[in-house]
Length: 429
Image (tube, rainbow, N blue to C red; front, side, top):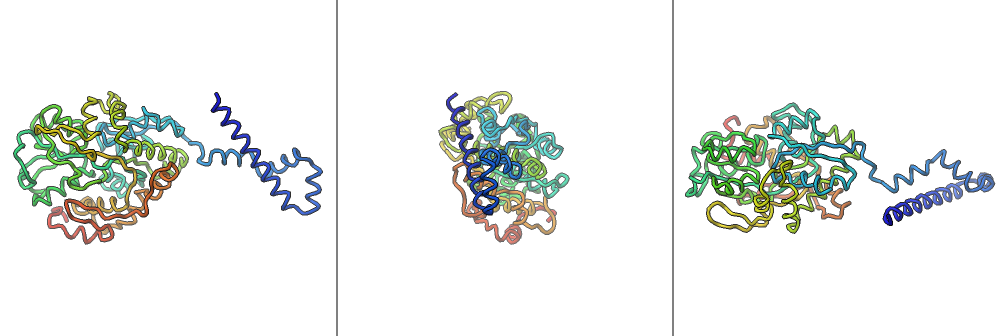
């Protein structure tokens, strides 16, 4: 009751201050004869007159709420039940959407093609996507071209190569020739990181192994049935394979590229421009939730919040092992790696450029690619930093950085030379 009264009192004082300032400014600007006339009108009549020309109530409302109220409060957000989606999922039960004036509900999809189609067909207002997907959709790779934004990354790291228990003696990529792998989607960091790892080990991902797309929730069953030898997949399905004693964690994705992006918050350009206040409220919710998830002290509570059947439908102990980084590796050991998964919303343009180089390398993009322009259009780094600054989180000095994959540095200012530098590439290139 007290906080409501204080808020109301603050709003009244703000309105009075605006009214006083505007009336004073008008009086000072008036000619002597006009000033005499306005003094004769009296304060109430003068305020009414000014209000007809310059609505003071609207100025006060804008000043009290400069963000603007969401045009659309009831929202649907598509997601895949994986720990990469943690901020997008937890924002519902932990109140982050509500905090910014939204009634947003997450909607679970069976696979990435379904999420993509929902987003394109407007069956959902926004979506949890793999970080290459907004680039692919914008460029029309694998679908009709539709301009999409990726305002924020969700998780960094958080994936692994998991192999069937029969391969426990295996040591290197070279030992994987003839393997059958699965990844969650063609346009995924999982696919590009697996291909990168195999190729660096001298294994051609299009000639020496088989890679097929399998929805993440079906991966453990495929491993158990012997349909695949392994996968590079999102959690919790790496840890779930260990939990069910059918597989072991061969390599964390951070060992290929530490702090690589994986999943993201994505929204169509049309929605963002048609409902700008709603978009900004949703953007704030996601950035806030992502930073909250980045604090290790919150991870166990988050695991409990997202474990239920309507979210990830996983044992809390499995999610805790993923989110805290203290986990059984399936080889009899307990590992402690607090950076196994982390959460950082900043969508570096250089990350987008690396993804585009791999799309070009493996034949997902043809012809000339304007790497920097596409990265700037889709990955909304500047907007993300504006939101972060507003919410009191750290910001960045630039949108480009050099990244290191398996000891090799990637210079985002030389993308085409980088593509040409690989000995192993798509058969079609």
